Length: 333
Image (cartoon, rainbow, N blue to C red; front, side):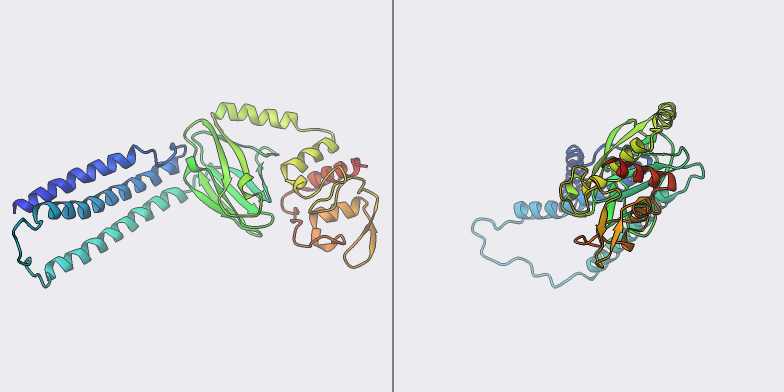
């Protein structure tokens, strides 16, 4: 009996030491969202189980190696044990019950993460190769940096213009894919004021590693002031507004403004020029053509360029924004 008592003490001490040791390593970044609290609680439970199982195996093994080692002069074999039905039943039932219990806790955590607040603020997230764009429909502007008020649930309504991307801020813990042609939702409630970074967590092309954007969590008062400044500072000149939109939507990744070759046609002297299409026909790059190329890019493919590169901005830019982008292209003569 004393062997079991000693081993039990070793396992308990080992579990505490391993758990505290792993916890001191800083395995997780700081908790910056309400969802992170629920997820980290579940992670901590897993950490306790991992520490216990490690101590259980190593404790029995180390104790047996020391106490039941072959002594000097011993030549006989150890006791031959054919099996133990009780033990086998226990180590089947207990792990099964443990897995079911953890699954239940995981379901509770998922329910907490998906819980909807009717007063949540909507932010539309558009991803493309290789940029992030954030639209604030309640305020009427968009930016390439994500500003969020603290202690308020945010409903991120997300879509991709080209390939699958994934929205991930490590400090928020939650992560969600952005799928072309679909809108996926992610709800976060920031609770810690600070500066963070959104990363794409899905391999999306040769510049995937650089697809990042700044995230700022600020107080509600500071957010209201920032939103007012954004609305007041929006360029009135369509050309300047178009230039801003081109930067926010990653247009420079494919279209140059100095005549250099890119994945898409250069915008330098494009307006009112003759353009040869992939079917051999020729059109004039007037306002109608430019507007159609933004809203329905696959209808008129320029000769020498792929039909699968240019994303469809019909559901991303409104008519005013498309007109501003056209005005900017027309200014590059």
